[in-house]
Length: 292
Image (cartoon, rainbow, N blue to C red; front, side):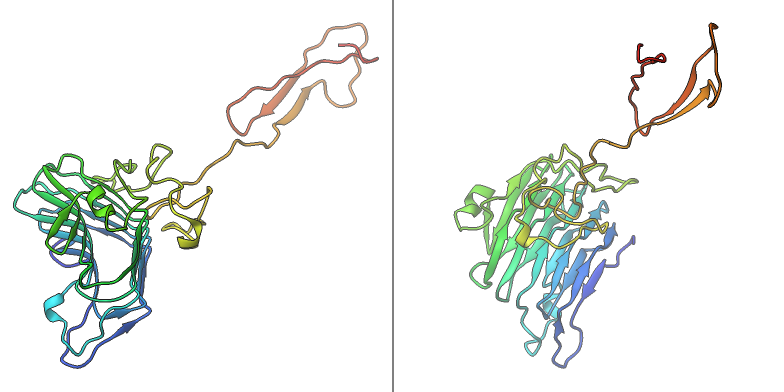
């Protein structure tokens, strides 16, 4: 997607009572949309997980908004309960200092919300960036932890806005949340356009094996099983660990041919070896009687 339209929204919009139950928004890649990447409203027992959100358009932006269109929500609509936002990867790169930017917002209303396993990278060098928007006075949160946020060169940055308070990670941790979260480079593979690749590698040490397995979805955005290591990786991608190839090489004897017999004469010995990966083959020539 590209342009002014929002990415994915599950919203209220009528004058009658509205409610969305058990909605799952999973496995999407959203690039350069309008003001919000993913937004929900009046949603009960809803989950947003394993999504990639990228914004390089110069416009105010929130990666995930819960709720999103607050002004359009009527008093008769359901109040959000048990919303889980987990294992999403967000990359925001703005170049205008007048624009607001936030990674993830869960506030205004509701009970038992959980936010964990998300990674956010602000790559621009202008304006103010806020990783997370909360309000503990109005909203009850069950779990907020195992998140990662990186500010690069943004001049003014905050880990969280809690109501009107702007907080660093250490200040926010004093509230009892995000005790295992981190500030630092997630080392996405190639996040900027045209590649837009937010997968991770062995250098993504702040993301790898950070989330307990009881909090993990069964798969990542590509359908790969979680976890690969002892715990799950933060973000939409689980790093696959590829071990050495233990398949034995294939050896084909070219000369002498099977059944050939040479007596008191020299002859070439030729064989072909096929390896499954770079390596070498040791060999020995054994004479009749067992001597080399």
